Image 1 (cartoon, rainbow, N blue to C red):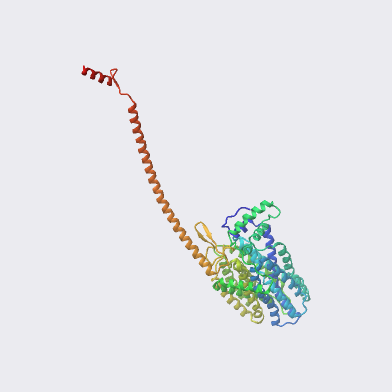
Image 2: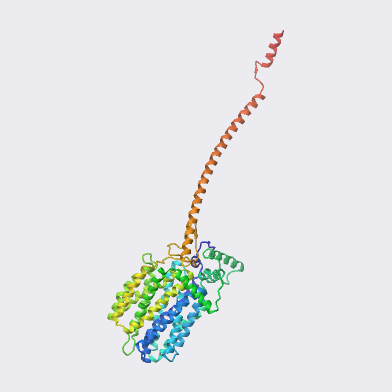
Length: 573
């Protein structure tokens, strides 16, 4: 593994070091768990109609049987997310899978209506934690292909929805008394997900680093890269050291306090802390998300029940063929969403708006005319819109409250789904169609109030600014996700002030350097001038010294001094 600079993010580490085999295993484990949601939701549309005849249930009893699952989902969504933010993604992932499997198996054995509602409520509690595998896959996936990989999970959802009519056809299609076998068979995929989650799904490195547990994050990334057993001890230490540098450059390195995890009061404290951090995220950003999830929860789950109601005869015999065809529509919707979600022209919000806008008239026309073509087209674009929102929502929250935020949104979609069976069972079909259209219009308005998350790193979330990091010179300033909005704004202002001071200091130093350079040039010219004068003086001295040492010239072979001496002697004589 190459060395990574201190400015590298966890997202970069994931994109360059995680092996393809590990990604496929993680995708399969999360996908099977995610398929459980599709199985349990589609199962309700068959089970409620069969038990209405088998046990002589009223419309309200049938609606409560369906709503008990959504009530459990609502309950699970409220506490699974905060617990996952406090204690980790992996244990909550595994626990929710176990509850779904165990509750689904018990549902097939319950002898009375009340016990069946209780077991379905337990299943709903487990399904309420299915945002966790979605979030953990998001945190293991790099930005450039995160949307597509997350949308692949919707293929599992659709596969689960398609599997239910097949199982229904070979069980209750033969005899309604085989509904218990049908329910037990539907719990098997989640049982397989339990085993795979235990073997293949590690803790999220982003969550670990956010908690300051850097060594564990390093080890998980190292294992996910396929290094275990292939390196010597010296190489392992060296590589792990490099990875630690990369992680420490991206997150706050100070570990948080150790929490008491075994007491009920400790769990309540963690839940309150997580909800407080969610509140600090900003109501103006949270409420539109909650409204969107409530509206699409009602529309999607209500529309599935509407399809089953339309294609069920008075003798409680299902037309399995049109139901399966409408389920296949979701595969097309997911494929179209994959093509558009990363396009700069559409992104997350644009794709959702287009899909909801197209689905609304087809949903209404199906409620009025009951035509299979309308159901098919409506389900293509309605499911595509829902899939895109599932991708965009965890991207809107920082790591510390991602599971809490996503779980809280999921709880609102369960409220909508819990209300839908009562209106679908008791209201006129055309009136139901108008309700669907009205809620979609509200969803479109709220989508315009949410931020686009195309291209954002999950480990670099801020208060809605376009850039995740504040650039100061050639470096980046990153503040931890646990800061509140006010603290984050103060941190940005401090960084901006530091940037201005640094720029002024750089200008001052440049000016001083310029003056020193000019002074150095003047001194150099003076030195050069002195050197020239020195050379001239040395030449003059050399000429004088040579002149003193040279004897005077002779005239006619007699020296001038001798001539003068002779002349002087003659004068004396």
